[in-house]
Length: 239
Ligand code: HEM
Image: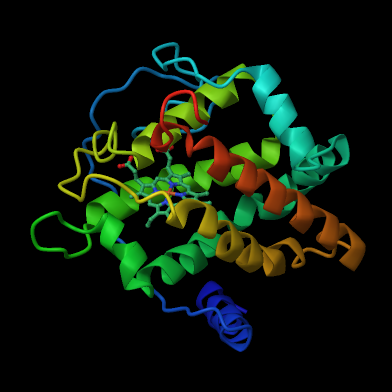
């Protein structure tokens, strides 16, 4: 089954479960001349424009590691979940493109969501913006599966929060788009993101029980981040 057939099969499965899906036209390739950025990761992966995980220039998260720990306990996110996330990494690593076809398909078929990638004047989707964010989103799948929820990770969560909020939206990609992703949609997206992930978790021979565990861990990990990303949207002292 080639990728497009696989995606179509998944689209049918999703349609059956009531999740809307359209295949977005393949986004244009990322612009050739990325602005020079300092190497910021310790990996040897090619630089992804705007991906600054681990950069010393990142602001420190206003959320402490103790706050994070309490939040993880409140979500019943345990060491077993961290192990399940790590198990999912090998399964998902070569499927990120197909996963993003589905996630972008969902956003593309939901006008209220696609609007956040739209041109601030014309409302038309900004293809280059979508493509650049997509590359970082692929990396985010692997970072979430790594489940090293340490200070560096927390600081990058703060950066991602600011990039959804009006503080920093559009800045990374110099995108002429609308100024903010309204917060209410962020936790909502936990459900389509993790529901559509399940067939990918199940596609490499894990037992149904392992798939359930990995899926449950992903739900908690995505919700954890959706909560952390709420911080800039909440009045001082009320987060
Ligand atoms: C659980 C929910 C969500 C997840 C996991 C998620 C994930 C991500 C990731 C990984 C990035 C790139 C971060 C980086 O720069 O490294 C990103 C950026 C972005 N996301 Fe989300 N997102 C969520 C909710 C939403 C929603 C509801 C929208 C509305 C359509 C949205 C729109 C955007 C936009 C416009 C950007 C680019 C922001 C910028 O200008 O830098 N996201 N998201």
